[in-house]
Image 1 (cartoon, rainbow, N blue to C red):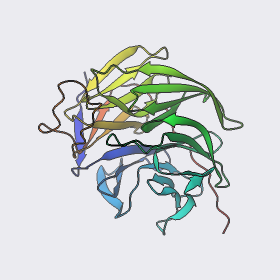
Image 2 (image 1 turned 45 degrees about the vertical axis):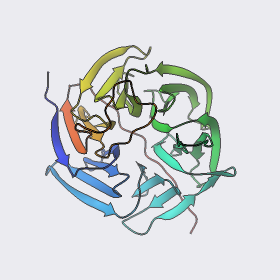
Image 3 (image 1 turned 180 degrees about the horizontal axis):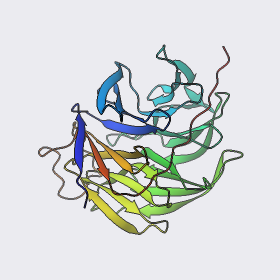
Length: 300
């Protein structure tokens, strides 16, 4: 069994959103709470802070250069290291308080809004689509804690995580129109396990899910059966991405700041132990697939 190693450790308070840039062989990831955005260069094995002092919850590479960014105040276009430009802070009248995101085959951006607060009543989140002209639309709703997204190999199935509900949903997805239909439960994670968080899909169509509170990553076959697990030392294992020259390298993020919630599994200790903060790496010889690139263009 290959060894899981730490390749960077900035003590990320909430490490999340890893994304691999195939063209330049670099991994980007974020510390949402610590407001830092990092880069790891495969050829030099060096890491550095690309941007700090600005919240980045999720990111997708954009075709014209730079990134499309999601955070608690909206959806942004960040190009060439300049100042971010707001794409949308509302979608069909609903606030864009966003978490994770992913680009689709046509260059649109899909992201989930999130208002989860266990201390009070909260509005349910939406699944939002941003078209290439920057207009934002609600395509589904009724979500508690929107999280990781991923596409099947043919991009006809969209997977979407609701962490608080402990459900990974599957939708029928039409890449031509950007419409998601027929939401169904792909996997209901037991209350005794961690929460499903960040998600990706490999080249064989298997779904990978990081488990917050679970100290592991789970690989599900296309039918929803657990095929394998990867244990980590981080109680708050948050997300993962495939990368490396052959897309067989797996990068796993984690979070150092303990975030206790009523939906923790029984017996979970939110006060002691190693919660996370490191970026992990492992190569199992399983090939991932490149993520799609956004193509969001704003009129000057």
